[in-house]
Structures are given as C-alpha cells and as structure tokens.
Image (cartoon, rainbow, N blue to C red):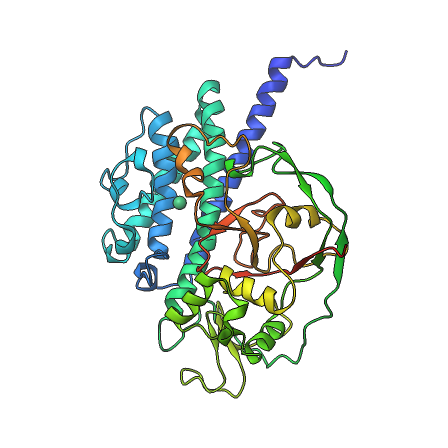
Length: 421
Ligand SMILES: [Fe+2]
C-alpha cells in the first residue's frame, strides 16, 4: 500500500527546505563580504577617502548592524546586542533607528578594531542562523523577507567595498592595486567593435517588477508606459570611443554640456574619466593612456567599456556622438533583445531618467521604509550591473541611482536615438 503523505508533512518538508536554502544563501553571501576584504590590510580597511565612500571595516559592520537592527532585535526576544554602542556607529541613515555617527567621519573609527568587527559579524551570524533554524511559523513569515532584504542589502555593500577601496587606493601616490595581477597586462591592441543601432518599435510596454522573486520596493509596482519608437546601441561606449571625444576637445566645448555638467568640469578640472592617467602622468609614466582600477594601473583597453564617468560626462559624450542616453524604460524594453550585448556585468549604465517613484509606489513598512523612497530626488537612474556587482544581484528591473556628478562607481553609458520619422 503506498504511503500517504499528509498535507502537514508536505508543508513541513517544504518549510525545512526553504529554511535550509536561506541558511545556505546567508552563509554564502556573508562569506563573500569577508573574501572581498581579505586582500586588504587592517589599515586599508579603516580609511575613508571621501564623504561618499566608506571604510571596508564600516561596510562589514554596517551590513551586520542591519541584520541586528531590522531582524534580530525586533523579532528575537532573547537576542542580546553584541555591543549596544555599535548602533550609533553603524546605522547609516535610518532616522527611525536612532542617532548616527556623521557619515564623513566614518574613517575616524579606529575603534572598534577590525577584530572586534569580525567578532560582531560572528555574533550576528550565529543569531541569524539560529533564527532561521528555530523561528516559529509566525516569526518566520515576518523575518524571512527581511532576511532576504538584508542579504540583498549586504550585496549592495559588497559592490561598495570594491568601489570605495579603489577610490581610496587611487588617492595613494603609489597607486597600489586592490587585487594585483601576477603578470602585468600587455598593452591591448584591440579597437572598439563596430556599433550597430537596434530599432525598437514603439507602443505600450510594461515595466517594473512582476512580484516573482526578490525586488526592492523602488522596482514596483509594475506598470504600463508608452514608448515612442527608438534606436539603441547594441554595445556600450568603449574606452577607445571615449578617447576620441577627449581628443576632439570634448572637455573644452561648453556647447556639449548641460549647464551643471559644464560647471562641474570647470570646478573639478575634469579632462578624462576618473582614474584615467594621461600619457606622461608622473605617477606612472607611459606614452599612452592608462587606467587605474582593481588591478592597479593598466594600459587603456580601447575595446572595453568606458567606466568611472559622471552622468554629466555620459550626457556630453552622447551629445558629441549625435545621440542621447536611453530612458530607464527604453533600457528595460531593450533588455533581452537577442542582438544587444553588455547589458550586465560591465558597467552600470547612466540613463536620462531621474530617480522618481513609480505610479502607486509604496515604501516597505517599518524602519526599512527609509531604504529607497527618501532618496527619490536629485539623482539619475542607472541600469544593468557592473563588474563589481555580486553574481546574481542584477536583473532587468533593477534601479540603481546616484547623483549626476558621481564618478567613483563603475558607471558608463549606452547610446540611444529617436527613431527617424
Ligand atoms: Fe546600507
């Protein structure tokens, strides 16, 4: 006689499998943060090179504080904080969760030591894994989505660990590498591939996340937009393309620039993307353009996507090229078109869309309502993902955002055009 499995048994097997999967994912994501920090000394992990960037040690602590403040303290009655004082040090911007240490002064936190921060992580890990294993059904229903948010949050900080340390190391006259190469790369002889324009038909398109799987609140709700027909480039703008813009006096021609962008060029002395070293740069003399990055100073690869440009530079380049930036909805509509390349894993792509709430946007409940919504002013949306984005973190509806002058992210551009009428 076949064994009859009760629905309660099926549910409990499903629940155990969900919990095991989340525990495994939690361990993997948390370990990746430590792996990113591993090449860095304790001194490297403490420095803060500018107000926008944070020390590696702070990222390691803040991502742990997030689990403590958002998941453990509200939902585990027996949880004891590792150190009550850490809330003030490692709260980033959550007004509802108490006072904070000023952001520009995170580099002054030589204490707690790196070892204490690592012990803090282990304390949080033990409590989270115990919660996943032992939470009752009611607690699990509330805690599981918050744990998923915490993991996606930690992945965002993993990218920031990389972008922030590259900026910090770029400020060192020795230009040390975050991840040195065993053998220096030879000077690339590649040139940019031919650029092809892909014709996209106009019409009503649905954009935003459909609710299947994880998404941040800013990706919802899914809604319809009307897109006129447009053209979009099949590849990203490459370093060799951008070098032509520089050689054509792109940084000296105000007619190419938005007013704020031209002001930023003048105020900051921009003449090339951040981390580009002009021929003859005294820090690493060479007769050709070089680029500083995770592997230190390397020859410019003319075929690789240009990175570390602001929105202003992206818009000026597009103007020079007789094109424009795509809107975020055009980018999303083009996602998945067979002939399009370099949508993910290269550079975040500046769009012409300002970071606004979608119609019907509702922030998450509780303290995490501050996660995205309150930043919806004065920033541009970037789409795709970059070489610093953790695997599996990008998706077609993902909305990254930065102020238009930001250059320390792995950000570049793809061109678009209105369709001929
Ligand atoms: Fe954060």
